[in-house]
Length: 433
Picture (cartoon, rainbow, N blue to C red):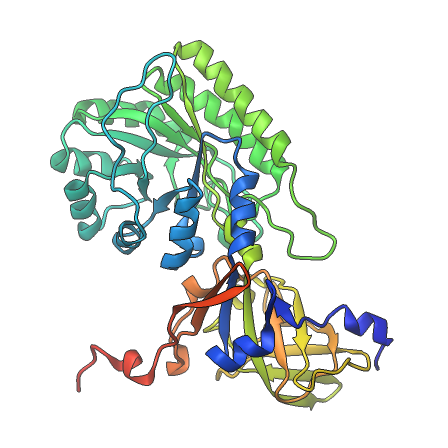
């Protein structure tokens, strides 16, 4: 059954950031990641009240994106040796220029912070060689760092005993999470840091990705209590990330002004207690890039399975894994190949090409196939999967020996290729028989 033309037209998209979807597909092929540079800039500037915006680059680590946010004054978080390397190639310095903080001034910000629950051997080598600041999520990291960098200052990532996220798999606090140092163990961890000759200069908490602000606000009180235990050595506190992004039509952007006011008040109370300034950081990932990204994919088959209609596209969960991992919702729109207006909308399931029953973009948490209202589609039409700029390409894979897609950045109405599509030769490079 179809519904009126007016409804169908709302689900048609012919341009991304002023550039024709059809032209992007013709020039770069499909599936294709497309990023809107102006949207990323707007989201960076949304958070200008904070002393430091530190991008969790695991959300979207393309070098062109990193360079763009660096030019916006945003610093970066790295969770691996590879992400450290990416940050350096994108133009970040490994550590802050020499300088001292006083009662009146903020301490210098670290351009790159390595955040993890362990040091693999390559990461420990890298932070020691480059002098990169470390955010320790496990007490064992302290002695390991002290052996290589005696006298280092560190940040502690603390698990406050509670967490929240858009999925249990993105919940990073509480007993069900491996992340962070358990809050009740802070006194012992501080003793271990002192024995190792390390100073604790930073405190960081993060309870989950895609949490709502009510839950995120609880972190401020928990961090303030832990800060009292650590004491005057603190110079930086981090609210972590997890800022929500509206994926569904009934969702809205969060009250960022109110959220900053809450954290600024906690910071000021700690400054009064310690007698010196504290740098207040926020660590967004998805918030800066999610809305900027889209996946353009071509419809390659339309079929019925009993009473349900499917449209099958050339992108799969090897391209965008969030729906199969979390049952995540992404808005979708159609770019008709013929260029005309659609004659109505239909309830359809949208799937990909992979040899997996779970290769469905319209599914709920738990793997149940759902449907979505979309204009009637034909082979050759283009489907745009929206709000795909965070945890999209970074989780893409070569499953079924599919090549990684190309990435394009649109800036000022001009589209620039920022990652070439993989070739079959790229996929097997490094293998031997």
